[in-house]
Length: 590
Image (cartoon, rainbow, N blue to C red; front, side, top):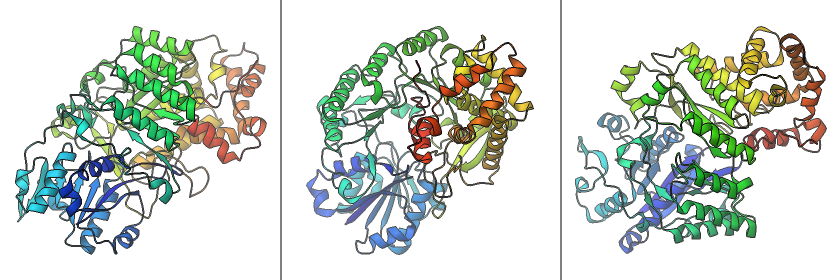
């Protein structure tokens, strides 16, 4: 029987993730003789092509089984491919799995072209399922399935998680992806899994379920061999899939080996991780070792500083006094940090949101701030009717947030259900929360007022509140961008536009996030921007010498002055995308 996998994704300007989850499944299956004797892999597909393109690929390799690894960023697209395959090849079994695969009877009856939905870990389930097909045995004997057969809905028992995940071969070390580097002209990014599970119970995360609460680890040798594979294949960027990289003591040794391979071979060049919430000393040492390899720095994730909101999502943060000490330590060692916040958490208010961000600016002016929209994933409490009623949650269904991607409009668009209000936050306040984080990130984190804020002899929080009030009531370039950003956000939330973000260089461009978009506008209109700052200083800080604005201008990277040999688009990609969290806008001054 012919088998094909789909784990499709957006094109991030020629950068594509290797389809790791599907590779893991096939690497596990193909180690068994009865599977290889009865099943043949057609391919593991990862590109978002037209439906017709995939049907054309399959016409000479009629699929008997098509498997889809569903995430928020590909479910609608996958379902369109699955429906078309079922129509073209009626005998093909359609199997869905992954975090976004649903198992309810209502869902399966609505998507009647789906034969089976897999829930929980998939490797052992698929092995038993494929053997069931071979031996023509009952599906009800296979745990972790939901399906409708003979008009009867069945959901089988929970699939227990594997405690020894080392029975799962590595798709990298078994050669699953080796020919991708010859077949495709992409810059491939591997996903690296050193363990599975998460001990925390955050309600907004699909890993917060008790099912995933125990952490199981892969053997050291496998992980060192995978690092060698990354290096040998000249991988530029590795994405660590762990929920808490650094939670294990051995993660420090893995980091040392990553750095040594980079020193010896030049690869991998960058590593990105979701860092552990505990073990601050170990995380600091890992970050110190990685140094420039650490893409974006260390996460000092908070999600909120509001205790009510934190209680509502079952999260405990680092105490403020410890957070200040840790942040200062990173800053003193010139190591980048960033703070994640989530917009729209139940219990958050507009005032608490502003205070959250301003507090971080005061204790860690070198840290980067992120403010993420809150997507209500299907398998979390944010899709539970009682949780929704308790907090009076309001939603907007919009195209899924996916900044810096090339978004196609000729294929099904992925939609997300985003929380935009609660019993403590109106929709209008939600929009203002978004704009306030846009303002701080653009002006401070992107550097446009970073140096100026430190010359005004006041706390950063006071400076930015004063600047924010000024730009909202005075004609200036920042006010124009405030209005443009507000207009764009309102269109997204009201369903009047396709995607979050802005295309800055034509209709074939990526969708830049709103902060980088405004930075591009400021760079294009640099003289106008700094003249506006002089007016602000004259009105709000009359005792400060206006020449300081010209000095500040010279401390911020300029395309015309400092990088005129680069194409402007390349300058923006390097400065406002790839280098944003590393503050590529900074110029070294004597």
